[in-house]
Image (tube, rainbow, N blue to C red; front, side, top):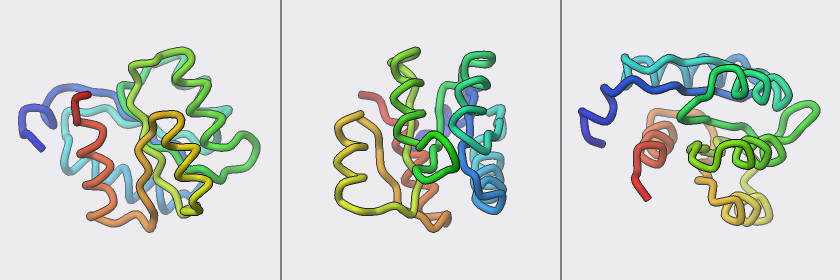
Length: 129
C-alpha cells in the first residue's frame, strides 16, 4: 500500500454487530490511516442511514447481523453509490457467500479480525480498478 494513499483524508464506515470486531477494525484503521474519519454501525439499517447522511468512501461489512444481512446492505449501498468500495469482513466463509460477494463485486476477507485480514481489507479498499 502506498503511504500517500493511506494519508489522504477518507471516510470509513465499519458495519458489524460485534463490538469487539468494531474495536479491532477501528484500532487498525486509526493506526494505519490516521487522516481517515471512522464511523461505526451495528446493523445494516443503521449503516444505510449513516451512509446516506455522511457518504463514506469505504465500508467494512459483516455478513451475519440482526435484521438486514451485510449482502443486502451492500447491495443497497452500491445502488445509491456505485463507486463506494466495500469489503465483506466475515466469519461466514461458505462458498455460497463467496459467490454472492463476487456477484456484487465485493472483496471477501475471512474473520477473525487480525492484522493480516485487515491488511488484506485495506489493500482492497485502496486498490484502483
